[in-house]
Amino acid sequence: MSKTLKLRAGVLEWQEVEGEIVALDFRTSTYLGVNKTGASVWQSLVEGATRDALVAQLEESFGLDRSRAEADLDAFLQTLRDHDLLDG
Image (cartoon, helix red, strand yellow):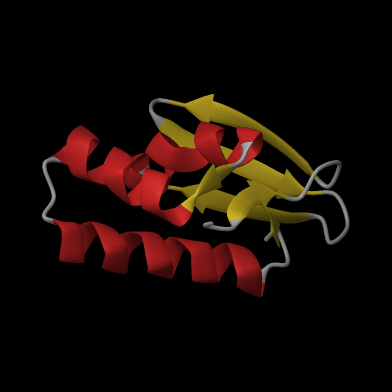
């Protein structure tokens, strides 16, 4: 069974602006800008999703091949982990 990935609850305020996400981490007063690719999976991360589901979402939304979708997603997830914004 794949692990569910989810944005850390209660530490972020965020808003979608012109297809991108602007988020504020309350703990550090740090802003994070998320491009359209990241924004496309953001809501799924708010609700909780597996890596495989997120990869499939990127493949469908942007017509990416699987290896490119995986690489883009993994880079995005690592950024979230680096900022301690991801549970799972």
